[in-house]
Image (cartoon, one colour):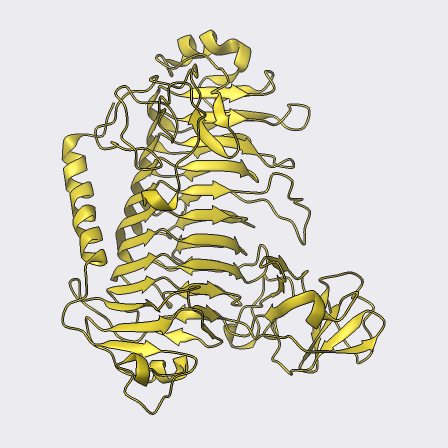
Length: 573
């Protein structure tokens, strides 16, 4: 059963209009420039008269349509505060100018000079504040002033970033007994101490301990509307990359595009989010999220206000290396409502060999949507997404209504995952599960993993899906009404549940080169095995869907015997 045309027109068309407004040029606004080489005594209105600091930007008053542009390649170790609103046709934009690497706003301080204090222990030359803000180092408890504890990261010479291990206690001068191996670090008496087998200034590009709660924030009790954040790097903060302020308000108009966001907080910390937001009419597109300590995208409310949060689009993003929820985490509270949430054409990937032993390793749901706190969550659209090597569940949706899970490719699990179900549906009403591929690679001797566990959920539609486990002893489906079914019980499963009547029997989908390329090869049982959904006309890459469509996120393309490959990600969005 397809989503009705009336539902499609009611919800999809306003989103298309909203997206157009968000990406259209600002009207009637001034353009201000900010550069590390600028001068705060100038007017900021030209490249030659650019401002220098974010503190100066924060002191200005901006009007609808204004743009504040930061020079590419520059880095600011400051916190940007957004204090004015735009309008729906004239948002206020914060973005880049020039060429080169995206301008960066870091929530940290750069350490690149060190003094040896004996053996392999090094002390920072620069004095800094406590990265943990006076809170316990476990990431679960706030310090004075309700500040969340942060972490530290090492920028390697090859351009990669390595997490510092969870902060070690240094209680007295000269006692470094807890610093035992590389990437161990601690703070004492306004300086950082680390274990390193050679001069850290030679071994690393820099160390980045967090110093500020956020990279960008809106003031508490005064959130702003119609804001565009485009083309920035937001990293190394104690708590959040972008924060909407608190408590939650029913505000509209936020666009986050083309940003790199990551390395936030403490792994599995109680507050360690790439985005902590609750705007309606929101577009999050073409961003890269990596190593956010708790959630890449937190759409959680914590007070009961009766607000309605709606019309959210999250598309064409890459999410990697989660430590609680790798991509979206949607969980409103009590009388709040979240509706018309579109999560589409996103790529979510984990390291299949990442150890999950605390305090350095944690499991992570690929995505999580939950209305269990008496809230109302409905009209949720999850389609054309690819999930690779989830640390636990590839998809978890709970206590939600009218959920449309179409054309996703769920591939594999982390070696240590304990997912029960690769797709987990908890007490949902009106689930539509169609045109998906669910591929499991865990041996049953390691952990039992059903393709889908639906519990007490009411399934409105379950058909045209392809299930496969490398271990044929693994399960296909489990629920509280029909029981459990395994790969060899396919016909019993179809007969007794009534589900998947048109689905191909479990078989290898024959991906071209998984886990890198998910285009099905010639002869795949996924090719042409789906049922068209009139509002899904393109695949993960934006290529036209065939009729009938290929199952999963990627449409089959006949290259007449040529090697299959994925097209360039960037060229197609």
